[in-house]
Amino acid sequence: MSYSITPEPEENRSSQVDPVKLEQLLRAKRAEQNMLLAVAAGFLASVGSAILWAAITYATGYQIGFMAIGVGFLVGYAVKALGKGMTAVFGVVGAAFALFGCLFGNFLTAFVALSQLEESSSALVLSTFVTSPGLIVDVMKETFSPIDLLFYAIAVYEGFKLSFGGPSEEELAEIQKSPETV
Image (cartoon, rainbow, N blue to C red; front, side):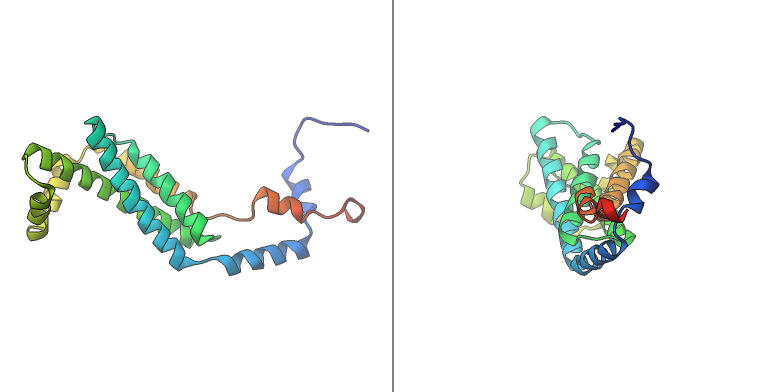
Protein backbone atom coordinates (compact mmCIF):
# COMPACT_ATOMS: atom_id res chain seq x y z
CA MET A 1 0.00 0.00 0.00
CA SER A 2 1.44 3.38 -0.96
CA TYR A 3 0.30 6.90 -0.26
CA SER A 4 1.03 10.06 -2.15
CA ILE A 5 0.77 13.65 -1.02
CA THR A 6 0.35 14.91 -4.57
CA PRO A 7 -3.21 15.39 -5.77
CA GLU A 8 -4.66 13.07 -8.35
CA PRO A 9 -4.61 14.41 -11.88
CA GLU A 10 -7.89 16.03 -12.91
CA GLU A 11 -8.59 13.38 -15.57
CA ASN A 12 -8.42 10.59 -12.99
CA ARG A 13 -10.94 12.31 -10.71
CA SER A 14 -13.40 13.09 -13.48
CA SER A 15 -13.19 9.56 -14.87
CA GLN A 16 -14.32 8.21 -11.49
CA VAL A 17 -17.61 10.11 -11.58
CA ASP A 18 -20.55 7.95 -12.53
CA PRO A 19 -21.86 9.56 -15.76
CA VAL A 20 -25.45 8.47 -15.14
CA LYS A 21 -25.47 9.94 -11.64
CA LEU A 22 -23.73 13.07 -12.94
CA GLU A 23 -26.45 13.60 -15.56
CA GLN A 24 -29.12 13.11 -12.88
CA LEU A 25 -27.37 15.62 -10.61
CA LEU A 26 -27.05 18.19 -13.42
CA ARG A 27 -30.69 17.72 -14.40
CA ALA A 28 -31.79 18.25 -10.77
CA LYS A 29 -29.58 21.35 -10.41
CA ARG A 30 -30.91 22.81 -13.69
CA ALA A 31 -34.45 22.33 -12.39
CA GLU A 32 -33.53 24.34 -9.26
CA GLN A 33 -32.34 27.38 -11.23
CA ASN A 34 -34.55 30.42 -10.70
CA MET A 35 -33.86 33.59 -12.66
CA LEU A 36 -36.59 35.57 -10.90
CA LEU A 37 -35.04 34.85 -7.50
CA ALA A 38 -31.59 35.64 -8.91
CA VAL A 39 -32.77 39.06 -10.10
CA ALA A 40 -34.56 39.78 -6.82
CA ALA A 41 -31.51 38.69 -4.82
CA GLY A 42 -29.19 40.78 -6.99
CA PHE A 43 -31.37 43.85 -6.63
CA LEU A 44 -31.78 43.53 -2.87
CA ALA A 45 -28.09 42.77 -2.33
CA SER A 46 -27.03 45.72 -4.48
CA VAL A 47 -29.34 48.15 -2.68
CA GLY A 48 -28.48 46.75 0.74
CA SER A 49 -24.74 46.86 0.12
CA ALA A 50 -25.01 50.41 -1.29
CA ILE A 51 -26.81 51.52 1.88
CA LEU A 52 -24.16 49.77 3.98
CA TRP A 53 -21.45 51.53 1.95
CA ALA A 54 -23.04 54.93 2.58
CA ALA A 55 -23.52 54.16 6.29
CA ILE A 56 -19.87 53.17 6.70
CA THR A 57 -18.80 56.29 4.83
CA TYR A 58 -21.03 58.39 7.05
CA ALA A 59 -19.71 56.72 10.22
CA THR A 60 -16.04 56.99 9.29
CA GLY A 61 -16.15 60.27 7.41
CA TYR A 62 -14.16 58.70 4.55
CA GLN A 63 -15.21 57.64 1.07
CA ILE A 64 -13.76 54.15 0.77
CA GLY A 65 -13.60 53.06 -2.87
CA PHE A 66 -12.71 49.46 -2.18
CA MET A 67 -16.14 49.01 -0.63
CA ALA A 68 -17.12 48.28 -4.23
CA ILE A 69 -15.33 44.94 -3.93
CA GLY A 70 -17.65 44.02 -1.06
CA VAL A 71 -20.63 45.02 -3.18
CA GLY A 72 -19.53 42.64 -5.93
CA PHE A 73 -18.99 39.84 -3.44
CA LEU A 74 -22.36 40.29 -1.71
CA VAL A 75 -24.28 40.56 -4.97
CA GLY A 76 -22.57 37.55 -6.53
CA TYR A 77 -23.10 35.44 -3.44
CA ALA A 78 -26.78 36.42 -3.18
CA VAL A 79 -27.48 35.70 -6.86
CA LYS A 80 -25.85 32.28 -6.62
CA ALA A 81 -27.42 31.37 -3.28
CA LEU A 82 -30.98 32.20 -4.30
CA GLY A 83 -30.86 31.85 -8.09
CA LYS A 84 -28.87 28.58 -8.00
CA GLY A 85 -27.70 29.31 -11.53
CA MET A 86 -25.34 27.18 -13.52
CA THR A 87 -24.96 29.33 -16.64
CA ALA A 88 -23.26 32.60 -17.50
CA VAL A 89 -26.63 34.35 -17.75
CA PHE A 90 -26.70 34.34 -13.95
CA GLY A 91 -23.20 35.85 -14.03
CA VAL A 92 -24.45 38.70 -16.21
CA VAL A 93 -27.22 39.36 -13.69
CA GLY A 94 -24.64 39.41 -10.88
CA ALA A 95 -22.30 41.69 -12.84
CA ALA A 96 -25.06 44.15 -13.73
CA PHE A 97 -26.32 44.40 -10.16
CA ALA A 98 -22.77 44.71 -8.83
CA LEU A 99 -22.24 47.73 -11.08
CA PHE A 100 -25.61 49.16 -10.07
CA GLY A 101 -24.73 48.66 -6.40
CA CYS A 102 -21.42 50.48 -6.84
CA LEU A 103 -23.01 53.42 -8.63
CA PHE A 104 -25.85 53.58 -6.11
CA GLY A 105 -23.38 53.33 -3.23
CA ASN A 106 -21.39 56.26 -4.60
CA PHE A 107 -24.60 58.22 -5.13
CA LEU A 108 -25.85 57.56 -1.60
CA THR A 109 -22.47 58.57 -0.23
CA ALA A 110 -22.64 61.84 -2.17
CA PHE A 111 -26.22 62.29 -0.99
CA VAL A 112 -25.19 61.92 2.66
CA ALA A 113 -22.22 64.25 2.15
CA LEU A 114 -24.42 66.90 0.52
CA SER A 115 -26.94 66.68 3.35
CA GLN A 116 -24.15 67.29 5.87
CA LEU A 117 -22.43 69.98 3.80
CA GLU A 118 -25.62 71.93 3.25
CA GLU A 119 -26.72 71.30 6.84
CA SER A 120 -30.17 70.46 5.56
CA SER A 121 -32.50 67.55 5.94
CA SER A 122 -32.14 64.46 3.81
CA ALA A 123 -35.70 64.99 2.61
CA LEU A 124 -34.82 68.41 1.22
CA VAL A 125 -31.76 67.10 -0.59
CA LEU A 126 -33.77 64.15 -1.91
CA SER A 127 -36.51 66.43 -3.20
CA THR A 128 -33.85 68.45 -5.04
CA PHE A 129 -32.61 65.29 -6.77
CA VAL A 130 -36.14 64.16 -7.60
CA THR A 131 -37.09 67.51 -9.15
CA SER A 132 -33.76 67.85 -11.00
CA PRO A 133 -32.66 64.39 -12.17
CA GLY A 134 -29.82 65.91 -14.22
CA LEU A 135 -28.28 66.91 -10.91
CA ILE A 136 -27.66 63.24 -10.16
CA VAL A 137 -25.36 62.97 -13.19
CA ASP A 138 -23.59 66.19 -12.21
CA VAL A 139 -23.00 64.94 -8.67
CA MET A 140 -21.75 61.57 -9.94
CA LYS A 141 -19.34 63.32 -12.33
CA GLU A 142 -18.09 65.59 -9.57
CA THR A 143 -17.46 62.79 -7.11
CA PHE A 144 -15.95 60.40 -9.67
CA SER A 145 -12.32 59.37 -9.35
CA PRO A 146 -10.40 57.35 -11.97
CA ILE A 147 -9.53 54.72 -9.34
CA ASP A 148 -13.28 54.04 -9.08
CA LEU A 149 -13.03 52.29 -12.45
CA LEU A 150 -10.62 49.73 -11.01
CA PHE A 151 -12.86 49.00 -8.04
CA TYR A 152 -15.95 48.86 -10.26
CA ALA A 153 -14.19 46.43 -12.60
CA ILE A 154 -13.25 44.15 -9.70
CA ALA A 155 -16.81 44.33 -8.36
CA VAL A 156 -18.29 43.50 -11.77
CA TYR A 157 -15.87 40.60 -12.17
CA GLU A 158 -16.77 39.25 -8.73
CA GLY A 159 -20.47 39.76 -9.38
CA PHE A 160 -20.12 37.75 -12.58
CA LYS A 161 -17.82 35.01 -11.35
CA LEU A 162 -19.57 34.36 -8.03
CA SER A 163 -23.13 34.30 -9.41
CA PHE A 164 -23.13 30.84 -10.93
CA GLY A 165 -21.40 27.51 -10.76
CA GLY A 166 -21.65 23.78 -11.17
CA PRO A 167 -21.93 20.98 -8.69
CA SER A 168 -19.91 21.34 -5.50
CA GLU A 169 -16.99 19.09 -4.59
CA GLU A 170 -19.21 17.39 -2.01
CA GLU A 171 -21.91 16.68 -4.59
CA LEU A 172 -19.32 15.26 -6.99
CA ALA A 173 -17.86 13.11 -4.22
CA GLU A 174 -21.29 11.61 -3.60
CA ILE A 175 -21.57 10.38 -7.18
CA GLN A 176 -18.18 8.70 -7.44
CA LYS A 177 -18.10 5.26 -9.00
CA SER A 178 -17.55 2.47 -6.54
CA PRO A 179 -13.94 1.11 -6.58
CA GLU A 180 -14.97 -2.22 -8.13
CA THR A 181 -16.54 -0.46 -11.18
CA VAL A 182 -13.58 1.85 -11.85
